[in-house]
Length: 131
Image 1 (cartoon, helix red, strand yellow):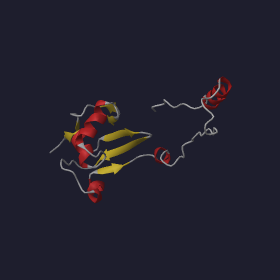
Image 2: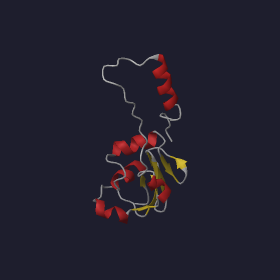
Image 3: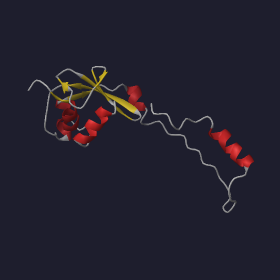
């Protein structure tokens, strides 16, 4: 075996829980092989670099060996080398900022003035960022 489908390899080395999750990630442009976006049917070879975006981190792997059946977690290091930079892994430990506005119970809906104050407070935060 000199190559294998990317979705099958991602599933076999436990990067995704199911093969259909791996295929879906490929279809949604969340998987790159050697710097280019790939389809689920893309063939990978030993030595290829694979980048997987799982929000908020972009993981980087190198294919050490090809495998077509799902492997136990302890054997994954035989087939994939995790080259994810430490800056990316640090994104997992960054505490998220939360905003909590206290209002008296039974105070009803906010007035225009209160609503403007809440909007001014929320203005600095980008809730729709995908990257």
